[in-house]
Length: 525
Image (cartoon, rainbow, N blue to C red; front, side, top):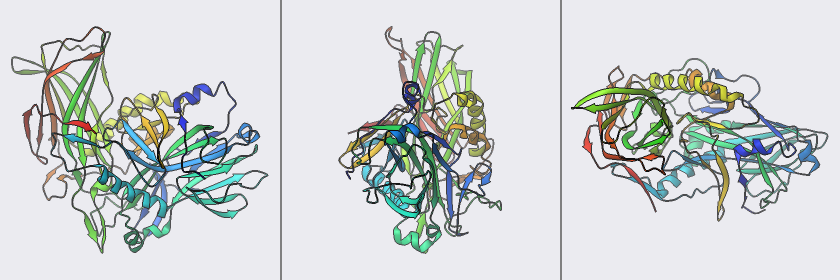
């Protein structure tokens, strides 16, 4: 079977086209597919916002496959780690053991090196975890046996009975019959709670976000162009570090992940500003350069991890001012931020903030400031705002989309496809409004404000790998800002020129950066 799976998948358009063609299958999914393994407790479990899920393991239900079965189609399950690009608007999913992407870097930051070699090293650790520790299980309800080709290049299958098999690998094919109904679940193998096993396999305790895609294929050759994406789901995995390695969040007596209790602040700098004008409406989108990389690790008996192996909340309050005669006059404020991925460096691009009763005047001076005070409070405040705003969207029928906590924006503008470079297969997801961090799909939007145990309550904000800390209080631990003016907009353009830009940073942790014109920017080869 070939290693090239040439897919052209358009998530949003599927819902539109479904009215013009028979329904091949339908995918239903539990609202949260999260799995954790505890080294200290020697257990693995599934959990949701309220805690451990008791009873049946949540998964995907694939049914109503009569048309697909009559057409002798195949079910193609894809699962792989998400790979975050240098910009938060680009996230990919790799099915195979290699990741490839343009060689990009952020200049004018002083950040540590985050080249393609470094990214591949992080990805290799994730993929080793997936190959060694994650097992999928598929059960079919049908008068026919669960049917598949036993030898598949990117899938290892083990038969349990005539209707059930387990599988490991990035892409697995199964025959569909007219009466087929499938249930697909994932779990972390118990062996991956053993420190010696993890150490010998080179697997660090970490957090891994993956994407499962459900496709209908014309055959199981792996090279067919007859492919239709019918659904997708984010599946999150993590190995909780041992308390012998780093301090952990509270143990509440129930099975929810214990994550690093110490909030080690990523290096953050103001990176730019975009302003657009549509009629009488102005849009404003700042961006931040972020580096969540740890040079030092905490180890015990040869097994190592760091706080950077886990995602971190970074939310703050943005305030906009007009400056006249050296004085600031308040215009507007709002909360913005993102969940910064583990071991990532790049430019965070939040959603566009629209103003209906605010205008920018050419030649006037403005100041934009972002204050970060309490990681959990700011996260909760942002989550409640986004949940309230987007709940009506969740009632739209036949639309399968993801929501990214980093921007709070559903991927309704998402265009998805398979890019094949040699034997490298990735799903690339482009979202014009930002797409970063931990994903929540469908009705899981409630998790934005209802997950009671993450992020934990942090008492201190600290410099990465340093004893330098500051107590969490009403006083900002970080303030980013920029001064700017706007130029005259061209008649045939929506973009408003942003000129005379100077950025600054005030931080008890990261240190201050005085007003500078050396603004961080991305360069790709």
